[in-house]
Length: 276
Image 1 (tube, rainbow, N blue to C red):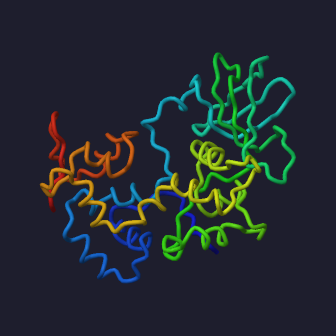
Image 2: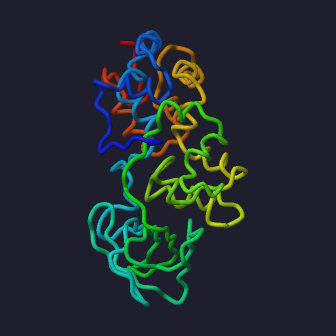
Image 3: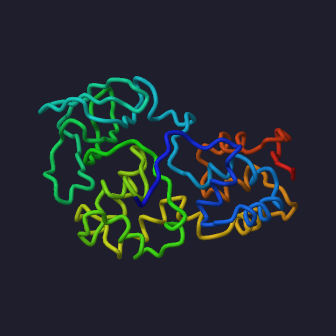
Protein backbone atom coordinates (compact mmCIF):
# COMPACT_ATOMS: atom_id res chain seq x y z
CA UNK A 1 0.00 0.00 0.00
CA UNK A 2 1.29 3.46 -0.83
CA UNK A 3 -0.47 5.27 1.97
CA UNK A 4 -1.69 4.82 5.50
CA UNK A 5 -5.05 6.10 6.66
CA UNK A 6 -5.90 7.37 10.10
CA UNK A 7 -9.30 8.11 11.56
CA UNK A 8 -8.14 10.94 13.79
CA UNK A 9 -5.04 13.07 14.31
CA UNK A 10 -2.14 11.81 16.41
CA UNK A 11 -2.02 12.92 20.03
CA UNK A 12 0.78 15.17 21.33
CA UNK A 13 2.31 12.08 22.91
CA UNK A 14 3.31 10.56 19.59
CA UNK A 15 3.71 13.78 17.61
CA UNK A 16 7.49 13.53 17.30
CA UNK A 17 7.22 10.08 15.82
CA UNK A 18 4.59 11.30 13.36
CA UNK A 19 6.88 14.07 12.16
CA UNK A 20 9.87 11.76 12.00
CA UNK A 21 7.98 9.39 9.75
CA UNK A 22 6.51 12.20 7.65
CA UNK A 23 9.96 13.66 7.05
CA UNK A 24 11.53 10.28 6.36
CA UNK A 25 13.66 9.94 9.51
CA UNK A 26 13.99 6.25 10.33
CA UNK A 27 15.69 6.71 13.70
CA UNK A 28 13.83 8.48 16.50
CA UNK A 29 17.15 9.43 18.10
CA UNK A 30 17.91 11.66 15.11
CA UNK A 31 14.53 13.32 15.40
CA UNK A 32 14.91 13.79 19.16
CA UNK A 33 18.27 15.50 18.69
CA UNK A 34 16.67 17.94 16.28
CA UNK A 35 13.47 18.66 18.18
CA UNK A 36 15.21 19.10 21.53
CA UNK A 37 16.69 22.33 20.17
CA UNK A 38 13.30 23.73 19.18
CA UNK A 39 10.78 25.74 21.16
CA UNK A 40 7.51 24.26 22.34
CA UNK A 41 5.86 25.49 19.19
CA UNK A 42 7.69 22.84 17.14
CA UNK A 43 7.80 20.09 19.78
CA UNK A 44 4.08 19.83 20.40
CA UNK A 45 0.91 19.33 18.41
CA UNK A 46 1.91 22.00 15.88
CA UNK A 47 4.10 19.37 14.25
CA UNK A 48 1.00 17.34 13.53
CA UNK A 49 -0.78 20.43 12.20
CA UNK A 50 1.91 21.45 9.71
CA UNK A 51 2.55 17.94 8.37
CA UNK A 52 -1.00 16.65 8.15
CA UNK A 53 -2.81 19.38 6.30
CA UNK A 54 -5.94 17.52 5.40
CA UNK A 55 -7.89 18.20 8.55
CA UNK A 56 -10.87 20.57 8.56
CA UNK A 57 -11.16 22.98 11.50
CA UNK A 58 -14.32 24.40 12.98
CA UNK A 59 -13.00 27.94 12.60
CA UNK A 60 -14.36 27.91 9.04
CA UNK A 61 -17.96 29.16 9.09
CA UNK A 62 -18.68 29.66 5.39
CA UNK A 63 -19.32 25.96 4.87
CA UNK A 64 -20.78 25.09 8.26
CA UNK A 65 -24.37 25.21 9.45
CA UNK A 66 -27.80 24.60 7.98
CA UNK A 67 -27.80 27.82 5.95
CA UNK A 68 -24.15 28.30 4.98
CA UNK A 69 -23.48 29.93 1.58
CA UNK A 70 -20.90 27.24 0.74
CA UNK A 71 -22.20 23.67 0.69
CA UNK A 72 -19.67 20.84 0.79
CA UNK A 73 -20.78 17.25 0.96
CA UNK A 74 -22.02 14.11 -0.75
CA UNK A 75 -25.06 13.88 -3.00
CA UNK A 76 -27.76 11.65 -1.52
CA UNK A 77 -30.32 12.21 -4.27
CA UNK A 78 -29.98 13.68 -7.75
CA UNK A 79 -32.93 15.00 -9.80
CA UNK A 80 -33.27 17.08 -12.95
CA UNK A 81 -33.99 20.31 -11.09
CA UNK A 82 -32.43 19.75 -7.66
CA UNK A 83 -30.07 17.66 -5.57
CA UNK A 84 -30.11 16.58 -1.93
CA UNK A 85 -26.72 16.88 -0.25
CA UNK A 86 -25.52 15.57 3.10
CA UNK A 87 -22.95 18.11 4.27
CA UNK A 88 -19.78 17.43 6.22
CA UNK A 89 -21.52 18.57 9.41
CA UNK A 90 -24.44 16.20 8.67
CA UNK A 91 -27.09 18.67 7.52
CA UNK A 92 -29.42 17.66 4.71
CA UNK A 93 -29.59 20.45 2.12
CA UNK A 94 -31.94 20.53 -0.86
CA UNK A 95 -30.32 22.65 -3.56
CA UNK A 96 -32.14 23.80 -6.69
CA UNK A 97 -30.67 24.45 -10.11
CA UNK A 98 -31.49 27.87 -11.54
CA UNK A 99 -31.26 29.38 -14.99
CA UNK A 100 -27.84 30.85 -14.16
CA UNK A 101 -26.39 27.89 -12.25
CA UNK A 102 -22.94 26.89 -13.55
CA UNK A 103 -21.74 23.29 -13.26
CA UNK A 104 -18.06 22.30 -13.47
CA UNK A 105 -17.09 18.64 -13.60
CA UNK A 106 -13.74 17.96 -11.92
CA UNK A 107 -11.74 14.77 -12.37
CA UNK A 108 -14.10 12.96 -14.75
CA UNK A 109 -11.36 11.56 -16.98
CA UNK A 110 -13.06 8.30 -17.97
CA UNK A 111 -16.40 8.44 -16.20
CA UNK A 112 -19.51 9.91 -17.78
CA UNK A 113 -20.01 13.51 -16.70
CA UNK A 114 -23.23 13.42 -14.74
CA UNK A 115 -24.56 14.49 -11.37
CA UNK A 116 -25.56 11.40 -9.45
CA UNK A 117 -25.81 9.99 -5.95
CA UNK A 118 -22.48 9.60 -4.09
CA UNK A 119 -20.74 12.30 -6.13
CA UNK A 120 -19.02 14.95 -4.02
CA UNK A 121 -19.94 18.61 -4.46
CA UNK A 122 -18.72 22.05 -3.52
CA UNK A 123 -21.50 24.53 -4.23
CA UNK A 124 -21.94 28.24 -3.75
CA UNK A 125 -25.62 28.89 -3.03
CA UNK A 126 -28.01 31.76 -2.44
CA UNK A 127 -31.26 30.88 -0.69
CA UNK A 128 -30.64 27.23 -1.59
CA UNK A 129 -30.33 28.00 -5.30
CA UNK A 130 -27.02 26.90 -6.80
CA UNK A 131 -24.90 29.72 -8.18
CA UNK A 132 -21.90 27.55 -9.08
CA UNK A 133 -21.00 23.97 -8.29
CA UNK A 134 -17.93 21.74 -8.61
CA UNK A 135 -18.81 18.06 -9.00
CA UNK A 136 -16.30 15.24 -8.50
CA UNK A 137 -16.54 11.46 -8.80
CA UNK A 138 -17.35 9.56 -5.58
CA UNK A 139 -14.46 9.59 -3.11
CA UNK A 140 -13.96 8.67 0.52
CA UNK A 141 -13.53 11.25 3.27
CA UNK A 142 -10.55 9.46 4.83
CA UNK A 143 -7.46 11.52 5.49
CA UNK A 144 -4.35 10.47 3.60
CA UNK A 145 -1.03 10.34 5.42
CA UNK A 146 2.14 10.03 3.30
CA UNK A 147 4.56 7.19 3.95
CA UNK A 148 8.22 7.95 4.80
CA UNK A 149 9.17 6.87 1.29
CA UNK A 150 6.70 9.23 -0.39
CA UNK A 151 8.09 12.41 1.17
CA UNK A 152 11.48 11.66 -0.40
CA UNK A 153 10.15 10.95 -3.88
CA UNK A 154 10.47 13.13 -6.95
CA UNK A 155 7.28 14.21 -8.74
CA UNK A 156 7.89 11.48 -11.35
CA UNK A 157 8.19 8.84 -8.65
CA UNK A 158 5.08 10.11 -6.91
CA UNK A 159 3.13 9.94 -10.16
CA UNK A 160 4.01 6.25 -10.48
CA UNK A 161 2.89 5.68 -6.89
CA UNK A 162 -0.40 7.55 -7.30
CA UNK A 163 -1.17 6.19 -10.78
CA UNK A 164 -2.98 3.12 -9.50
CA UNK A 165 -4.36 2.04 -12.89
CA UNK A 166 -1.02 2.70 -14.64
CA UNK A 167 -2.60 5.04 -17.17
CA UNK A 168 0.33 7.45 -17.05
CA UNK A 169 -1.69 10.16 -15.28
CA UNK A 170 -3.37 10.68 -11.90
CA UNK A 171 -7.15 10.81 -11.69
CA UNK A 172 -9.11 12.68 -9.03
CA UNK A 173 -10.01 9.44 -7.28
CA UNK A 174 -6.37 8.32 -7.34
CA UNK A 175 -5.26 11.67 -5.91
CA UNK A 176 -7.80 11.31 -3.11
CA UNK A 177 -6.56 7.82 -2.27
CA UNK A 178 -2.82 8.50 -2.37
CA UNK A 179 -1.79 12.16 -2.21
CA UNK A 180 -4.41 14.47 -0.81
CA UNK A 181 -8.05 14.08 0.22
CA UNK A 182 -10.31 17.01 1.02
CA UNK A 183 -13.94 17.55 0.06
CA UNK A 184 -13.42 21.29 0.46
CA UNK A 185 -9.97 21.91 -1.04
CA UNK A 186 -9.51 18.87 -3.29
CA UNK A 187 -11.81 19.92 -6.14
CA UNK A 188 -10.31 23.41 -6.33
CA UNK A 189 -6.69 22.19 -6.19
CA UNK A 190 -7.28 19.53 -8.83
CA UNK A 191 -9.27 21.82 -11.15
CA UNK A 192 -6.59 24.52 -11.08
CA UNK A 193 -3.82 21.99 -11.70
CA UNK A 194 -5.62 20.20 -14.55
CA UNK A 195 -4.54 22.85 -17.02
CA UNK A 196 -5.60 21.00 -20.16
CA UNK A 197 -8.97 20.03 -18.58
CA UNK A 198 -8.44 16.39 -19.45
CA UNK A 199 -9.84 15.22 -16.13
CA UNK A 200 -6.50 13.84 -14.95
CA UNK A 201 -3.11 15.16 -13.87
CA UNK A 202 -0.07 14.61 -16.09
CA UNK A 203 3.56 14.67 -14.98
CA UNK A 204 3.82 18.22 -16.34
CA UNK A 205 0.83 19.30 -14.24
CA UNK A 206 1.77 17.39 -11.08
CA UNK A 207 4.16 20.02 -9.58
CA UNK A 208 1.29 22.52 -9.62
CA UNK A 209 -0.85 20.08 -7.64
CA UNK A 210 1.93 19.17 -5.21
CA UNK A 211 2.49 22.86 -4.46
CA UNK A 212 -1.01 22.84 -2.94
CA UNK A 213 -0.32 19.76 -0.77
CA UNK A 214 1.13 20.88 2.54
CA UNK A 215 2.86 17.63 3.51
CA UNK A 216 4.80 17.85 0.24
CA UNK A 217 5.69 21.48 0.78
CA UNK A 218 6.70 20.96 4.41
CA UNK A 219 8.86 17.94 3.57
CA UNK A 220 11.08 20.01 1.31
CA UNK A 221 12.90 21.34 4.42
CA UNK A 222 13.88 19.96 7.81
CA UNK A 223 11.97 21.20 10.89
CA UNK A 224 15.01 23.22 11.92
CA UNK A 225 15.15 24.95 8.53
CA UNK A 226 11.44 25.82 8.71
CA UNK A 227 11.83 27.21 12.21
CA UNK A 228 14.88 29.34 11.35
CA UNK A 229 13.35 30.72 8.18
CA UNK A 230 10.12 31.65 10.00
CA UNK A 231 11.75 33.19 13.10
CA UNK A 232 12.11 36.55 11.38
CA UNK A 233 13.35 38.54 14.39
CA UNK A 234 15.77 35.71 15.37
CA UNK A 235 14.71 35.70 19.02
CA UNK A 236 14.27 31.94 19.27
CA UNK A 237 10.46 31.99 19.51
CA UNK A 238 7.62 32.26 17.01
CA UNK A 239 4.95 34.91 17.24
CA UNK A 240 1.52 34.30 15.78
CA UNK A 241 2.48 36.31 12.72
CA UNK A 242 5.66 34.27 12.24
CA UNK A 243 3.68 31.07 12.59
CA UNK A 244 1.42 32.27 9.77
CA UNK A 245 4.55 32.68 7.62
CA UNK A 246 5.60 29.12 8.42
CA UNK A 247 2.19 27.71 7.53
CA UNK A 248 1.93 29.87 4.41
CA UNK A 249 -1.52 31.18 5.33
CA UNK A 250 -3.39 33.12 7.99
CA UNK A 251 -6.41 30.85 7.65
CA UNK A 252 -7.33 29.38 11.05
CA UNK A 253 -4.12 30.87 12.47
CA UNK A 254 -5.61 31.46 15.93
CA UNK A 255 -6.69 27.83 16.11
CA UNK A 256 -3.25 26.62 15.05
CA UNK A 257 -1.47 28.94 17.47
CA UNK A 258 -3.57 27.98 20.48
CA UNK A 259 -2.92 24.32 19.80
CA UNK A 260 0.81 24.94 19.51
CA UNK A 261 1.22 27.32 22.46
CA UNK A 262 1.50 24.77 25.25
CA UNK A 263 3.02 27.29 27.69
CA UNK A 264 0.14 29.79 27.25
CA UNK A 265 2.44 32.83 27.26
CA UNK A 266 0.48 34.78 24.68
CA UNK A 267 -0.29 38.49 25.10
CA UNK A 268 -2.86 40.69 23.40
CA UNK A 269 -0.22 42.42 21.30
CA UNK A 270 2.40 39.76 20.60
CA UNK A 271 1.81 36.06 21.10
CA UNK A 272 4.86 33.89 21.51
CA UNK A 273 5.88 30.38 22.52
CA UNK A 274 9.14 30.00 24.41
CA UNK A 275 11.58 27.14 24.63
CA UNK A 276 10.59 24.17 26.79
